[in-house]
Structures are given as structure tokens and as C-alpha cells.
Image (cartoon, rainbow, N blue to C red; front, side):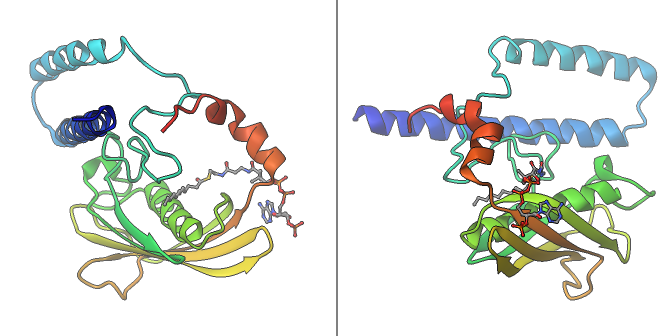
Length: 221
Ligand SMILES: CCCCCCCCCCCC(=O)SCCNC(=O)CCNC(=O)[C@H](O)C(C)(C)COP(=O)(O)OP(=O)(O)OC[C@H]1O[C@@H](n2cnc3c(N)ncnc32)[C@H](O)[C@@H]1OP(=O)(O)O
């Protein structure tokens, strides 16, 4: 086996392990949010969680270093808080995007609750920002969100399969507009939350100012 095949195998195995840990963490969060266990069980659980966390803290990166398992240009972000399979706080949303159009699916648990039984409005905005970002990126005009207008028409139910959509509607120089919606998978045409986002493509000097340290620390592919 060649060195490059071995290193691809190692990366694949590490990404699978990251996703497995992410699944375990999401299960932990959902159970810890839903539990009505007595205090002694909570104290015991806290001790076990701290024991599990300690070895993970021995080798860590700072914010100027990309995760080794990530591939920024290839769109792999293992710890993204919306799509990252390794993120404890990502539902995660499964997104497919091409040509300026994106669709996504997820189910939100009790950890995302705002009003009883329904999603927090900030969570809906976060999901839509990500959805619009994928539509914008795949339109060939990547940029950063400078404005996100969100309309909450109906509450978003928890523990219910959701369907998310987004599409680019206008490209005006460096400014790109996209719209998106959250609906249930059962009634995908009945939008619960809609959003319009304005994204701005960065000038080279802006990209350098914001992301210079990360690009300098990037590991070779
Ligand atoms: C497959 C992989 C998928 C990958 C998919 C990845 C998805 C990720 C989704 C998450 C996306 C995010 O959350 S991004 C994170 C949240 N966003 C941010 O943190 C951005 C913070 N903002 C900034 O740092 C700055 O605003 C910049 C660098 C973006 C732009 O700098 P600036 O000085 O404000 O603007 P400037 O370059 O002069 O302006 C460019 C044009 O945009 C206009 N403009 C700028 N801001 C605004 C504004 N708020 N509202 C209206 N218009 C504005 C200006 O008027 C100008 O128009 P004109 O004069 O040209 O006519």
C-alpha cells in the first residue's frame, strides 16, 4: 500500500471516529436535556463526562488552526455547528447543494427548544444562514453574510423531520442575495420560517485581514 493510500485511509478512519464521537455527544446532550433523573445520577454523570473530556483536552488546536480532518476548499467542516458530524451542537443538517440551490434535512431535539415544543428562533436563523451560505457558495460567488432578515410565520416543531431550502436570487457585483425557508418534511410547501440574506464577496485585502492566520497555518493536502 502506498503512503498516500495509507494517509487517505487514516483520514477516513479519523473522520468516522469524529462522527461517532459527535453522535455520542449529541445523544448525551439530548438525554441530559430531557432527563428527569435524580440529583445523584446527575452528579455521577457529570463526573463521568469530565473523565471522558480530560484526555481530549491534551492535544488541542487554537482558533487560527483548521481542524486536521477538515478540508476547507473541499467543503468538509467536521465541527461546523449546523452541518458538522463531529459537532455536539449540530443537529446535524444534511445539505445537498449545486448551482446556487440547496436543500437540507434535519430533526431538532429538545436541546434546541425555545417556546415549549418548538425551536428557538435563533436556531432557525442559524440553520437558514448556513443554507443560504451553501446556495451562495455553489453559485460560484462565495461570501460572508452581512444581513439576514428572518420571518417567523409559524413555530418550528421539535422531534419532527424538517425540510430546508435555499436559492440565490440575485448577483449584483460583490453582493449576492439568497432566500430560504424551513418547513416540515410532511408539508414542504408550507413555510414556517423564511429568510432573505445578503452576502458580500471579500476583497483580497479583507480575506487576508480576516483569515490570514488560518491560511498561513493550512496543512498541505
Ligand atoms: C460547499 C461548501 C459550502 C460552504 C458553505 C458555508 C456556509 C456558511 C454560512 C455561514 C455564513 C456566515 O455566518 S458568515 C459569518 C457572519 N458574517 C460576518 O461575520 C461578516 C462580518 N462583516 C464583515 O466582516 C464585513 O462587513 C465584510 C468584510 C463582509 C464587508 O466589509 P464592509 O467594509 O462592510 O463592506 P464593503 O466591502 O465595503 O462592501 C461591499 C458592498 O456590500 C455592501 N454592504 C456591506 N455590508 C452591508 C450590509 N450590512 N447591508 C447592506 N449592504 C452592505 C456595501 O455597501 C458595498 O456595496 P457596494 O458599495 O459595492 O455597492
